[in-house]
Length: 71
Image 1 (cartoon, rainbow, N blue to C red):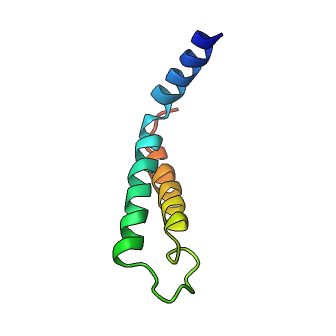
Image 2: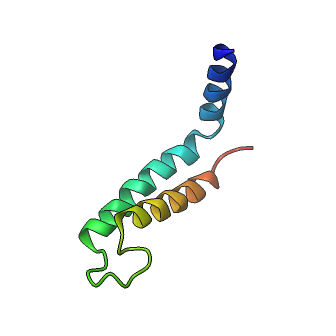
């Protein structure tokens, strides 16, 4: 049973590696944007919180590099 789960996980990683790299890069970029540029007043929906900046960055990175994957 464990080998079957590991095999599925490895297959998922192999087929989606570009999207996952994009998500990681986007998350780092989102945090850096929050840290250096962010919204000081707290009224900005995305950049007022580190968590939201990271999530949005990861989604954008995942979507952008996902465009280059072969299906």
